[in-house]
Length: 62
Image (cartoon, rainbow, N blue to C red):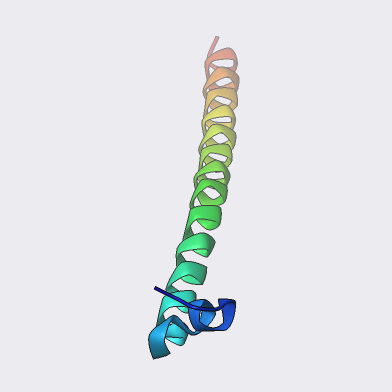
């Protein structure tokens, strides 16, 4: 039990470990969806480019 906010934030001497762990976790939780969205957009762009190239190839061979 903590008797004051200062004791709570000090975490019994483990504040650096505890709060840096929370910070890293928060960064990962923010970065992961952003990374997935960027990869998704890149894949969609590549597939559109490949589909367009295939379409142009098919029209050129007629």
